[in-house]
Length: 503
Image (cartoon, rainbow, N blue to C red; front, side, top):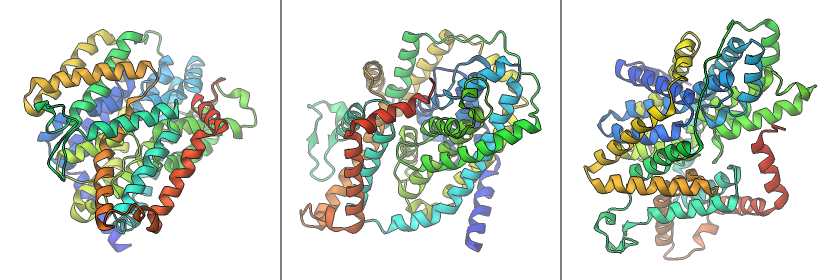
């Protein structure tokens, strides 16, 4: 207990330094803005900002990027409630009852409940990270190469299982991402592979270029093709103070949403989106009168808003303790850590306790800042809705080009960024999301490295992956997940969950 308290004190000492506090404020403010402005999203924003982190202190860079992620969960609820337009994917179900409350003149109450529920969930999630970080890191240190190989396989399959859309397409995206990660020089033999004699590919594909193109440029192209318009002319917030009846109805939903989001956030493929949909479905199942949902039921707002924030923050647990990203945005965090020369995993707690505990403490500080930012400044956020997307688009594309060029001052990187952007656009049009591809790209080198090390230790015997107990259990679980994905009844049930019971 004494060690834990000293770690917490160290974390807050790092988090509240002027530099880190400034970057935390910058991250959560930018995250709120991104959540409010539909058509950008936290993944694209983090991808765009990765080049900037080259010149930033490592702890400050990670604090800022994390703030963008969970800050977007707060901001996304604002447009969902006020104009029935989710600024972030995890806020889709917030539209159902949040906007209904706004039409009843209770937009202020809806905003207050969403902010307070998110703050409570964020606080609980931060405490949970503190509680499980050290035990999980100790377990992870006992993992060998074969165990890590099997853990990556299980994580990728489970991420596919929990993702929306076709599992076959998601698996294809993961395999494509792993394949792209192999381009370059073989780390063992020094031979070229998959470069086709192109000198620009000798060092492989830069993660930042891939991320900016697939997540940033493709997002712009999709939104230009679909059209993103907002109408904030008739927005009226009203009173921000919930009644006692509101609190009595909302608090149990907040507790359930926090628990559910905290659990799902840890799972590969979980996170904010899965948590919010699952929470809404749960609240409808438990309600005495499900017909209230979609008509302004405060539980349908409080539960998902708490769940998505808890899921966003607990998704840092596998990243910080095992070095395994739970979703696409966590894969971007892995890239940010590697840019800073930090290998994510259990060793970070030992080698960089200031970064590890400072990042965790900054999450609670960031949630407090978000509570202050979201309610008193609601008028400013509403005015952002009036910015036409056609003005934002050129600026975002300019930042994409500058970020890609600034990596190595190469026009080729800008060209690759554009190629990946167009490829991402067409992949999305055929129903293939880029997030599994990013996961495969980030985890591909880890998968290859541990497979080679395992085979080297076992003198080329693949039996090592089933004779090690931990590895065997993980491979067995992977087989179970693969079988579940192949069962038609399970597949149909996944689709129902991701529809959020909107009917």
